[in-house]
Length: 242
Image (tube, rainbow, N blue to C red; front, side):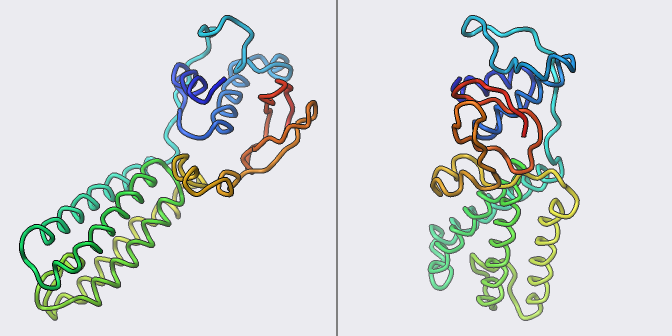
C-alpha cells in the first residue's frame, strides 16, 4: 500500500495521519492489536487485509489525543508572533522609513520566517520545532540588544535607554514559555517533519530509528528506536516482534 492509502486508512479509523510510512504502518498495526482478541493479534495484522482493493473490514473507531496539547497551543502563539514580526519587517521595507530600519528589514523578515517554521513544527508536536524556535529567539534577542537605540527598528521593537532591560526580560520570558513543553510533555516527537527530512536528505530519514532485518526475506526495515511490539515487512508480509 502507498503512504497515501495508509493515511486514508488511518483517517477512516480516527487515527492520527501524520508521519512517514514506517510510523503510519506501526500506528495501524498497534490499532489492529487493540481491536483483535489476544490469540489472533499474535498471528495476523489486519492493517494489510486480504480483500478487494478499496474496501476495508469494520474496525473499532479509536480517537487518539494529540501528543501535546501544550505544544500545540504554544505553536499557535509562535505562529501569531511570526506573523507580527513579518508584518513589522514589511512596514520598514516598504514604508519608506529608510536608514538603519531599511537595512535591517531583510534580517527581520528572515527571523519572522524562522519563527513561522518553528511554530509550525511545535504545533505538530516536534521536539526539534521547540529547539529551533529557541535558537531563533536567542538570535532575535541578541540582535535586539545590539541594535537597540533611540529609534525603533525592525529587529528591536523596544527603544530608549530605559527599555534595554525590558527587551532582555521579554526575550527570556519568551524562551521560558516556548521551552515549557520540553519540561512538561514527555510525548513530543523526535526528528523532523517529513518535508524537511526530504530536504535534509537520506541521513535524517533514519534519525531516531533502528534498522531491523526481516527474519523472512532479510529486507532492511526502519523502525522507531523506542517502538516495542509487532511489525510487518512490506516486502514479504512476514510479521515479527521487535
